[in-house]
Image (cartoon, rainbow, N blue to C red; front, side):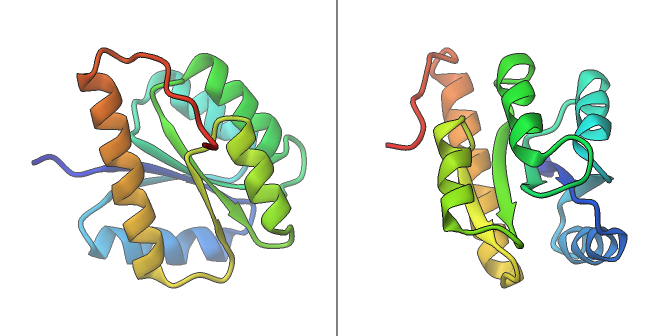
Length: 137
């Protein structure tokens, strides 16, 4: 089985380094982006399975980036990170097509469980012909 390819998007450089290192130790293939525009640029040239996307970032917000991803990269599952925000932001992300959300700070095992679930969902969608799957229900 191939490694799950992740893109972690957050404007906090130390957080990105820490999460990248901890996920790579658990056999994930991890790339990082420091903002929404950088993430969209990366996705236009590189396939990933799951995006972990911070809600609050300067420039393009995570919510705006999510909306672009849903239009141009609908095959990618997105897990929203809500640190400075609230559960309401996570639920808003789901209403815009995110697969799930997680609150910062989080336990790495909880994040890994959500990543694997999102990846499994993406695989099932692809194998099922890529039909529309509603989110948030």
